[in-house]
Length: 600
Image (tube, rainbow, N blue to C red; front, top):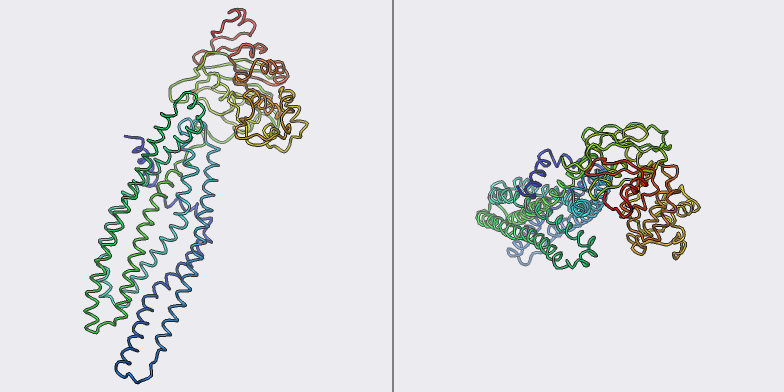
């Protein structure tokens, strides 16, 4: 089974449990506005149904004037009945236009608000999802869920459903009016209806499948586009522009082909509907003309029925088109619900959060312990295998090992980004699996290798927009992180505005800002992942000279390949193949291997 077929099967199961039922909570917020729109539509439909009858009455009144004129040309002409029906028709048309205008305005506004609400709900869910979900879901697909899918949901649900309701009400009301006026003529005119309904039912699943395919291709295109933008510099440096452009062209062609298929189906379906209505109109004119000649009905009534048939035709075609348009919304809605149904944790046994051992809003002692920890990003592909060690409060522990040994994974687990499949990770003796991850992260500061700085001032990036820090605290943190000197030299100093990802700063400067950010919050636990890998020797010397101050009074786990970064640690843990292979001190490690021995 292909990935596309598998996704179709998954979304089909969601549809089976009731997509319509799940729309209730989403639309409930707008029930007042939607109720007003429906009331306006009911009034509009009532007027629209009366229009053909009013036209027939006006025509019959005109024919009566013509008959009297032909019988007695010298007699005065009485246009009062004709003028009366014309005025009634004009007033009714004005009422219908005003009601329709306000209904459309309210419906379109509701659709835009619904799209904004959906994006808000999706982003709130996005923030709660475990990192394991994003290991499986490409960034482009996530963007498609949060940006593109709401665009295909909001307007069809708000405006499309209301329009569908209005057209359905108009269709039923027109049928009732025709049957009430002359049921024989109505049955002849509706002879086309079973054929039209059959065509719609046959085509519906094909439209749904085609729209699902379009949504899948949008996601694939987003994935490719996000990769092109994020990795542009690397692609240029490696000379991979042509290959990358070819992949994007392939995704673009698949996206185009999917939408061309949808358009082709529309091009085939619409004339087919027109053909069925044409047959119905021909039958009506044939049978109705015979009734007029037999003086069973008036010419005005036949004209009214002709208009009624057209009024049956265009709302039915619009209903079919709206249903087809809603297929796109249903496909997007299925994907949104699938996103919202993702569990907030990869651990199915997780329950309510326990109270941390430190006081609420207080500070941890900073003792971390790994007890027989096993962890895999994918099932049974173990990265850590029974790892056990303890970091005491205020102790600096270095972690070394070859690439892929699991060093960065240790930090991810200690900061509650992931949960181990086996074993326990304790903070002050409490298993962090039972604690609120946000409470754990308030006690832990992490400095990673790939620093992310936000658009804003340097000060805002250090204090992360928290109002509880003043400029003096920010500057003190920067001094201890050896960042104050270069920040003071920037235009505007701490008020210097950084652009996207702070590209105007060097890699080393961004790393120093991240040190200052960590220290500003004064956490009891500090995790450093290759914190000096992106700095030059002079900057590394600055960081090393301040490293003792940075880690003083807090438990620190320092991951690095450079031995100079590990030299001041109290202990050194060597990890190989996910296991603790050696526990020593940096000095003993260097003595045993000699200077320049780089292998772990």
